[in-house]
Length: 233
Image (tube, rainbow, N blue to C red; front, top):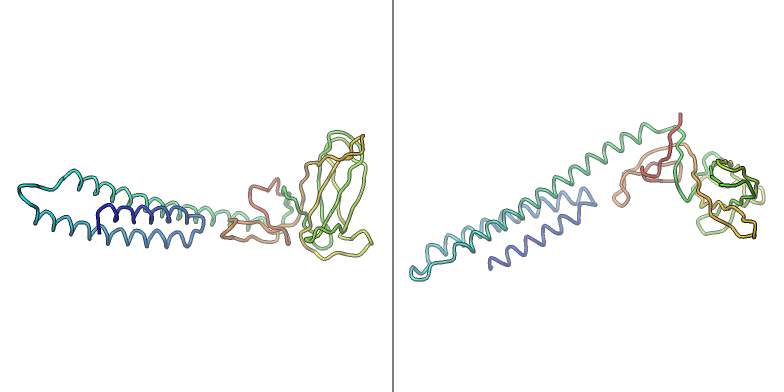
């Protein structure tokens, strides 16, 4: 095993440890394994170094600068792995704090930015802003893209709200869940313009996922903390 190959192996291990920080549990394990492997290789390196020093040709001594450089490289890789492990622990602590914060919202009305509206106990609420007074169209579709409810209303300039009674266009009650929603203002030329909107629901729980981090649940709708606009009583 050459000195360069040992360092290359550890550089790869460090890169793997860095990329795995998105999955907190597996990242910690990877960092520990990489650090353990590094310690073993570092011990092998020192043994090789001592053997070479004992058996070097007095007329052609080994280059001490090379050994010094390799020692520095090993130290740098070890520090990188330790840093990755510390960052992973920090992520875990942050997520735990977010879980506690989200738990305190359970049962409260929460307004969030989302492309979906939560239907809870047969009711859903949306708030939208229109710069000018005029007709507005709201379309609600299911997971298959099929429209279940479409309404047209006259909005005032500024903040507006609409409550979905949970029924489809035929008057049938829809099951609770998360439905896609679009709010559009109707222009004078007959075209439409998407309007900014938020939805409101009751916080029902919190979930810590590997892919998306801590998620606040409003019934069947899950959103990131960054999507929260306001929290009511």
